[in-house]
Length: 205
View 1: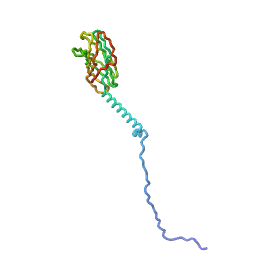
View 2: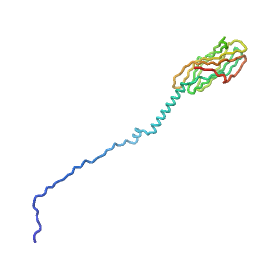
View 3: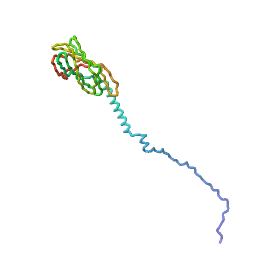
View 4: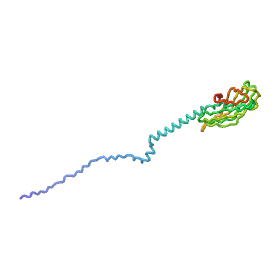
């Protein structure tokens, strides 16, 4: 039998290595989020900012209203409360003074109450001690009048002058002249009359 084994003789074929160039892999990087506490501090919630703005607006409006209310303070309300004439030369006049201001107190000093005859033949000036009046306060001021002429009945003009200071917290003081005219009052001996709140004096600052 013929030998089927054959040996191939020849030059080996060259071995080619084929390589392919691929791009490097894409690596995506993201910033590291800050901790929860740090993020809450750097970015406060919207309602906190809104609350702060509302508080600032409220304080501004309150201060503005207080300032204009104080700047437009009203003069005191003054009335003749009563007149007691034990005799024609010894009178006791009681004046009612009310502070109508809600935010400003009033300081009175250099107070002088003058009583003069209607035709201005004589005049008596009575000094009164200084005093303070709180917001919305009301005071009674007694004025002793001595040395008037002897007569059965007399018509007198009652006036008052003073220096007043309107003062409120955190505001500059306002010093002003106060002029009060209570008009003509009829006085007679042994008179003890409560005039009441109908006889209101004219007040000017």
